[in-house]
Image 1: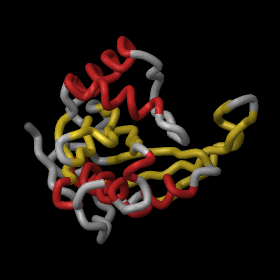
Image 2 (image 1 turned 180 degrees about the vertical axis):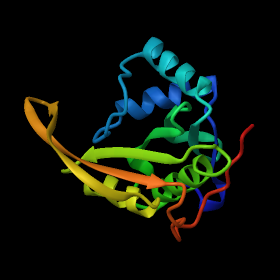
Image 3 (image 1 turned 90 degrees about the vertical axis):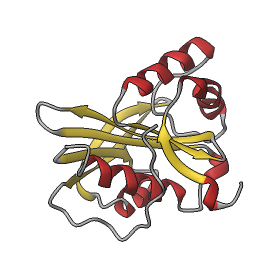
Image 4 (image 1 turned 60 degrees about the vertical axis):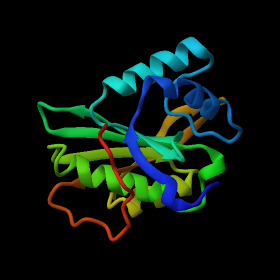
Length: 175
């Protein structure tokens, strides 16, 4: 990994499709979508490019993760989600990226509530959520079927009126 000074958040670009496919092929990758080949990576990337709330976590220009919000503008709320390649985990980058995007979405992004959920057996995702200012609101028992097993999901929320977390933000560009 390069120096943290080269890490920033930027809009996802169509040229990120190969990096997204690479991310989905990584071992121990928590999936946020279905990407198996070049066409599905291109479709996934195109959807992110069209999403006002879709950002690439980029290191030296190369996408190493995604932080996005699927927004319901009528209700000013959004479903918040993120993933990071294993090569860039464990350094606090995902937490910083999530805090940055959540702060932006609840400010300039015009949303008033963000929601997210993660597998209960993925405590690292919960640490990211809490570092981004989310508060655990509940548990959905046996929500997902993963490899033949029912998995519990912990749910979180963050309101525009909640205090911003002390987590250091990453630079965010909209270009």
